[in-house]
Length: 292
Image (cartoon, rainbow, N blue to C red):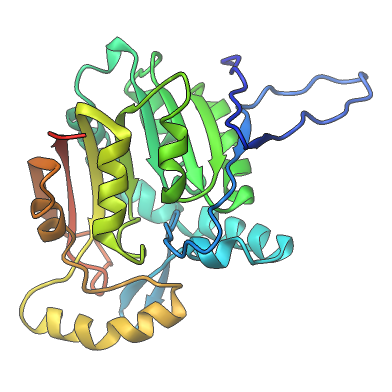
């Protein structure tokens, strides 16, 4: 297994390793770093989604927003992480082939040693994809507000032999992460995240500032449909935001990205996921940062 180096961010606090009696061995896992969230900032980023059958369709049950995640007690956060992990497996299995192609095309020449941020990493279901693509020279910095999500993310990273650093925080910590000696990221990856942030434009702005000029932003999101479907999503979105911690059914994320002057959208694909009639369509693709 990969032997990760612990990276601490000031004023972040690195989690101490467990005390061991020495009578047995431990699997080495990537480190967890905690970044303090700025007081008064209500921006949020959701992490991995689970899926719930609803009237013949499938509803996106988003992770608690960062504002909620920081206030949930430990038992609630732990239970939520378990639910997200188990509830997403069928979905991830169904989109695996498409995701492999998406990551491969978006990250390009990953043999040169990329430093990637997965924003809203959740339990890191993409870990096995990096392994499948043989991205041995890639470091993934996973950001999520839920520490129990990150515990599971570290486990999956260790199993996949992915160089992974978990950071407890939200999109507001991106600036701090890029002021370390490592500098800005080569790419930022978001999977089912922008549906639940409070301000898509603000989050996109933070992402663009955290990526090197010429670097990539990879997106995988569900968005508003057209015609009657879009009208239904408009009507149900307020309820969805209440029951799914801020998830919007009717976000037009691609239009937001295309209107952002710091990105040039290189590739965007619209597609459907089997069984996801309410959370449809999906978009995936990547954009190049043209201005820091």
